[in-house]
Image (tube, rainbow, N blue to C red):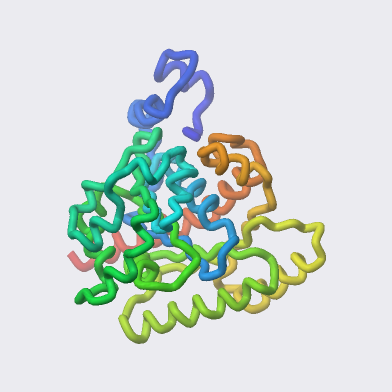
Length: 305
């Protein structure tokens, strides 16, 4: 995680065991900080259900925090699954994003701390199921989430949204707030219909609301290479969406389901599992693009100044 030897580690902080809080202290002591990526807002969304968005987004957010980034995970699903994947119950929290978008509460009032010092989250519960209806009559309803984030955006390197598999005003808000879109798909031909609808939606946002995403990443999830149909579906994805399809494939891994049922990200449940290894590979593929984009923006700002 820190890229140092055991000797360097023991020399920096003389302990036999380390807690998450120690990791942050060690980063400061050893000056081992991750490369800057600016302030990214990343949405995990697919209109088709069952693609593993929650397990993927939660583990992705957790790992980014382990790597040293300040992360805010926002649960947009009224079932509160990503809240549960972090080990918490949404019903235990009085306030959710509903209070921010509908009742105009400051976003900082609904942010909760996780067990990692640099990973915060906004919980969700069944109260979120009425958000779309409540937003319907509001002026500027598509921009409520984007505007709410302005209060806290400077505190986080990455804001990760875990969205429900539907299209409504809440997901439209998430799309309008996002700079990057991650689309988890299964290697089956049913996924193609959901992808077509999602890309049509993204195109309409560009044309009608002038919102252009910086990156769109298609992530093949829960892949089983022993299935002939899965291989054929993967080949079709590679043919039709080559510019968006990440080379990293998340293999089928029972540890995902087990970790979720235990309320733990897969990096906590089994950091050596196929799922954890593949998510790390996905991050290794995505992060250099984010770092390069941040460097380019910094250079442009310098020239402009």
